[in-house]
Image (cartoon, rainbow, N blue to C red; front, side):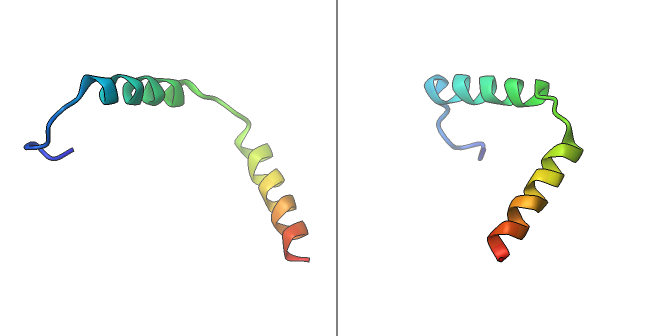
Length: 45
């Protein structure tokens, strides 16, 4: 965010909450990749 830009707590609080939630998100990355590849192959046919 540029230094001279006005800061609005209404916008910053939800953004901070989303960053904290995303930082705590854990998943099976290999399963996500495999699923994406399978869907991508079906879409190309």
